[in-house]
Image 1 (cartoon, one colour):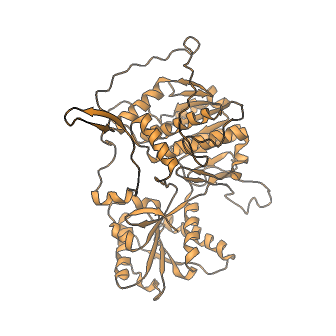
Image 2: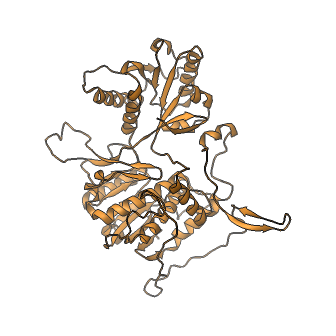
Length: 487
């Protein structure tokens, strides 16, 4: 059975497996963070923000102290529930307007009032995620946890859209992380009638859904996969997660705002996949220079497994030297490079380093290196916890699920709210229009651009593009033991 929810304007029809997953999610997430790895206390401070704001819990009376205290954990035994799916014609759904109180801001908060009327046209949305409801056990699979978090955020967006008069018929289906299951889903009426498809998580299922969207001319939103080239001649393919190329271009633009081409050094290991990344930086710099024959960044190619990296010959005395390191798979390599740079920094050299998003999750590198070497990273995700919209969303999420939202929950909320509005505004033509609608979201910004994978081949085809991609990338600087937006 599919894990499915239909949501039409002010009417909610819950299928039981979706609710069971969300109940399981709330319980496990509040049970001492069972699924998070243990972290060193000194390194945890990189993930903390100056003011996360207090999330209000339930107040109970403590007879021992004679005072009221706030309880934020979920206590007590969890009931064992047996679900029975009842036919909708015999047991009609409970009617609810799905609204909740509060005031949003800038059209992106949990109580967004940017569109208060809706188009009045009902649109069908199909969401395909790997809930893995077919698997038992005492733990939640990582893929399933991603889907549950994403869906929890999307659920709050459903309610928000309904309160604004946006009429959606949303079907949520469990891919079970299986290509054969997805093949069966594609044959169902929910996919055939969908005006918008959102999913999936695994690459092979993304490819299957992309082919379906291309053949049936349906907008297909991919929330997670960032790999380029998965869609060709498929203008309905909408990639939310910026590609590696977009990350490299964002780093190049940021570095060139302050530094000359001659100040910048690209550093990779002598591996084909790493050397292939160099072209993205050189091409982006050529655009800035306005010439393909302009001077290029210097390149330092390090032999694999080398830990004695000679950086001195690349320094310019009296000037800041910028090292851009598009490498992440080998933490030991990054550590060795930063250690060498720390040595020359201690001798008075001014160093700036640009790295990749994965660096914030490293365990081996001392964060003092990040601080003293002015480390910057690119990131598709950044939440300002001081933002009132974010505070409202976190409070609503906590009130609903008993835990704070993860990155996936923010993503699910932002995607559902934005694309719910876009399908209401443009219908099936939204892929031809959304590159005109930049939009601030809680975790950053949506800035969709048309992507042509082989411009030379299609230079005579006006208006041709292979896919759409959100190209907005944050540049974060490590300062005061946390990553924050760089100037």
